[in-house]
Image 1 (spheres, rainbow, N blue to C red):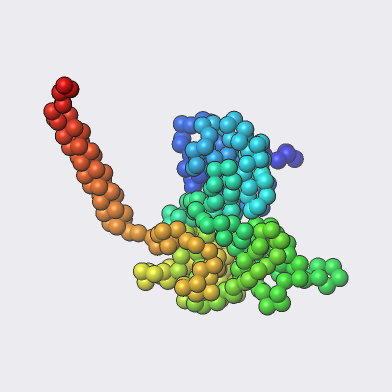
Image 2: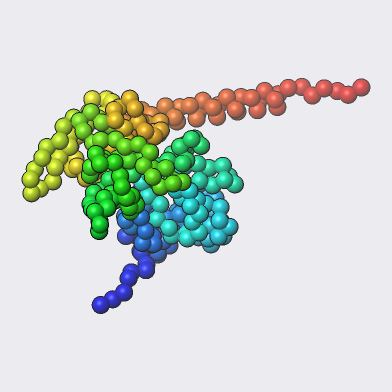
Amino acid sequence: MRGPKCHLKRLRAPSHWMLDKLGGVFAPRPRPGPHKIRDCLPLCLILRNRLKYALNYRETHLILKQRLVKVDGKIRTDPKYPAGFMDVVTMEKSGDKLRLLYDTKGRFMLHKIDSSETGVKLCKITKRMTAAKGIPFVVTHDGRTIRYPDPNIKKHDTALIDLETGKIKEWVRFKPGCMVMTVAGSNQGRVGEVLDREKHPGSFDVVHVKDGNNNQWATRLENVFVIGSSTYQPLISLPSSKGLRMTIVQEREKKLRKQEEQLAGNVAGNQKKKTKENKPKRKHK
């Protein structure tokens, strides 16, 4: 049998990393960690491709070895460390405080947060079991094991975890009326309210969701992540789009508006330059 795979071709890298095709043969293969290979974003891509703090892989290595980057409150020095959904990335030297979320096209985005949010994180409960000697515990989506949780917490609920102590501060039940974000499938990144849950014994349960524009979609139960008890009470701050997907026509109108504003700004700048050039120069006595 062969050993573990250590390489990743650039063309086989996840599309949401948005790597250019001609940027090289290989892409950074994430280390085994709290998130799956295709559901994470390595730290070197965050520093080089997203934040533009480095020009190449070597520079990201030098930045991380200075112990300047923290993920969920812990210093990480591995350029291939897999940061994933809901992780908090902080850099004290630059003042960056970011949370990894999805945009409405299913790509990772670095959402800026306040200092009040850097100490907490939302985790989805994926398992609830009983260990040896009758000790109850739950497992979260990022691989955490928390012993002696609230007896009422069940699978698919969401816990608000204090990153300093690792304990559950608050939790939200998955039920109709709660606020969820779709984290997989063709509706990845969309935010809405749960309408109902269809149970299919022996198959996948289906959840129906409605967003703020009254658009509805259906997805598997495993693909939704509770982020609030209702649409008016999210436990974390959301991006400016609020998880509402625009249609193709709306996207086109937005691009045209942006182009018009840029053209207007360029014209105004050129006029100012011309007026300065045409001003008569004062003669010194």
